[in-house]
Length: 152
Image (cartoon, rainbow, N blue to C red; front, top):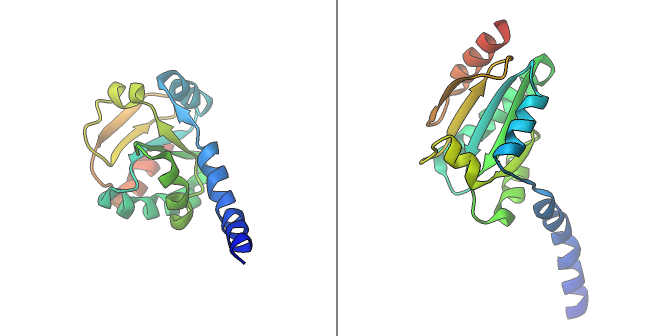
């Protein structure tokens, strides 16, 4: 019976372990390449951590925005600053995150001068950073920002 329980536990944990292993880390060059691949779209970089209460409040709004705007030229990219890579996949699954999420390398957090989270960066269709800052962005403000970025 003990052997069966361990086998069942392993089978149940396998998807989470596979997700953790597939969560790619990005350095500054990788992020630059990723942004270049989305030129012509409005992009939001959302720096977050699983343990951050404002981040946990903001991400459900990002999920809704992603669903509403994905076909309109908006890309949301999550960048986790968690030290424990294994904590992220279950967190993302629980919140229903369907947009791409990467582990943020220290070269990225240094480049943006990130000292607290959530930290959001908005990039226009030309690839220029137009807005960046710390703090939770309310749903209505996200809608306004993306509507404006899509106009330009």
